[in-house]
Length: 128
Image 1 (cartoon, rainbow, N blue to C red):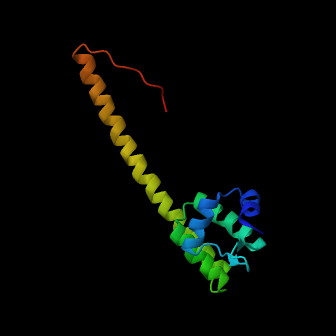
Image 2 (image 1 turned 90 degrees about the horizontal axis):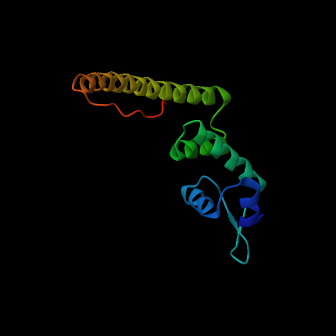
């Protein structure tokens, strides 16, 4: 399929497709007229890339996973270990963000208390 059809089938724009090709995430085959041609597997790979990005994987990590899949050097157990590792990484980020939020909430409360004690009005912002 040509790049236009791949765009329609995958929802990924041609600039992103070219970038993914530069990174080695997808492979284009050159026709005799030097146009790029893509296989149906490219659509599958693009769906995987989008899903993996949503799961927090970087493009470099996705490239490693795709290379391992293409070379049959990764199995389901190894895949599960990768996902578990990514989940732990995300949980650590959540914990860090929750601590930062708690700190900021405490500081906000102190500042509001001080403002009220000094007769200042507190602007109200929408709750998050």
